[in-house]
Length: 188
Image 1 (cartoon, rainbow, N blue to C red):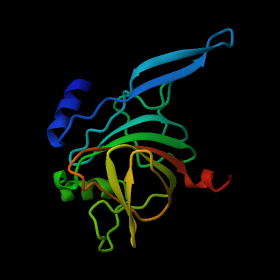
Image 2 (cartoon, helix red, strand yellow; image 1 turned 180 degrees about the vertical axis):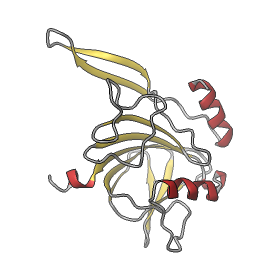
Image 3 (tube, rainbow, N blue to C red; image 1 turned 135 degrees about the vertical axis):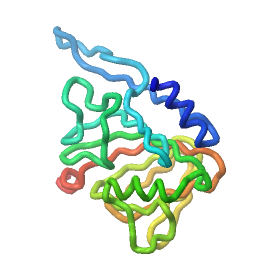
Image 4 (cartoon, rainbow, N blue to C red; image 1 turned 60 degrees about the horizontal axis):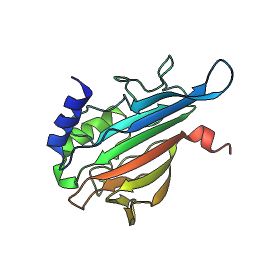
């Protein structure tokens, strides 16, 4: 299935079609001069049923794919990358569009789901330091106790704690996540 078909299929599951992320990659030529190596849609995106549409833009560490592109089309990623970093753009649909059993299966497959009577179906915990940035829309960041409404431009520093994302707005919310391996993030 081509990328456009994936985006159309995803659009059927949420109120708006997610936009492809434009990824611009730099490098150096043979003379050591900086150049633009590539400029186009990020090739990696999720196709997991019942999950938000996510595009992995770049990866370092153990999860990076071998070869010149660490995040090629079709490469599967966990929530973070051991020994490195992962940049992911996620389009969260409104809460009412989820099928909680599909999302639970996805979280279980990654071994991160909170199974201790969580107050929201998205509760999970990863061993990473995450910078979560709202790009468009709004979303509630939920902790075991307390929550914060986040809007475009807000940043949450998620420090390997149990958490959830709740989109109660009726509209999609786009977020950027920079996930750092917990071992690396504690050394600085």
